[in-house]
Amino acid sequence: MINSLKDGEKMKKILCLIFCFMMTAGFSQNKEELKNNNEKESLNISKFNILPHYFGFPLSVKFGWLYRQNNFSVFPNTGIFFSADNGPAISSSIGMFIQKDFFKWDINAFYDFVPFTMHKKVSDQIVYARNNFIFVINRLKISFPARVGRRLVNEIKFTGSQKELLPKTITEISQGIRFDVYLADLGYLKATTSFSFFTDWIPESRFVNYRLKFDLPVTFKLYYVDVGFVYTFYNTGRINSKNINAAADYQIEKSQEAMTRRFSFKDVQKYSSMHIWGAEIRWYAARTGVNSSGFFISAFADAGFGSNEVKKINLIAECGLGAGYTLFDNVPFTFQAGFNQDLKPIFFLGVVSRIIQGV
Image 1 (cartoon, rainbow, N blue to C red):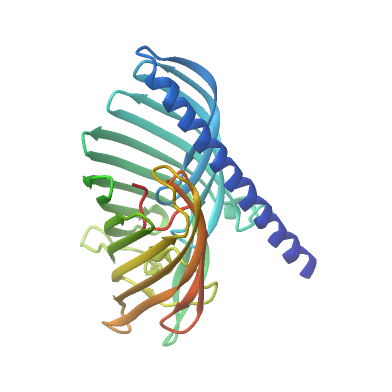
Image 2: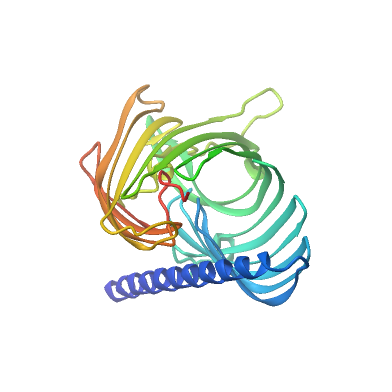
């Protein structure tokens, strides 16, 4: 048992190193392609391509064959995803990305292999598909994401007056809409906002819930210092009516980890509603100019409150220090460590924080 746990930890470290390497390779390739494409009026590309996504979760690296002719492109691909909505998870994917003018279509099938599930029976495997129609109009991006497949949830059971949470793998159908808006992009200042609304349906128990999330990050870039602020709001609830009579109940609340992306790896409270204000400052000892690379040290602090059925107002707080390396002022590999309101240690190791944006 101990050896299997050690092997699992080694595998996670190896996967993280591979993930970071592919991120760097993909970013360098994209910068070179952009430079070459700007020199040509007519585009005709057919080549192997690595496509990283590092601004916002889920983080991903896709690789496949890209065909592009002027403003139309097709990219069949396979890849690796890191998500954190229901705890840290690493998934493999296969899919296709199609783009024409302002329209994008992204469809993928996923299999979660971390946390390790391959030793479980077929009905407990986490396999699902995602489909996303995207429209980009000037500074506005509208997305229609959908998810269909298996997911691990906690079913609520009562034994007398005691509430128990029983892990269960269910089939779920989710559909939503998301708006991303670029409010300002002045070089030294970047402000964006995003709003999303989802409904989740579990057919076997006729259970329906909704999720609503709003983010407003603002970043100031000075010569040696980056300063970022963000406000995050999250709310979820069960949808009940005369026509919807759920046969079971599930835990739908989220922890603050799902919002801040910093994990304590210990049991934490979950909330149906959260308001969180965050700030982060980064100091570069030797930033030489625009699109430069360099090490930085950082400090962060988050404060807010969450609500659940036990208590209406629960304090949410996190603070700590960090360090990292920024590649071309856009890809900040960063590590953060600190503690939360319960004095439990928290950690973040990733490609980009939710507060500081690339400018």
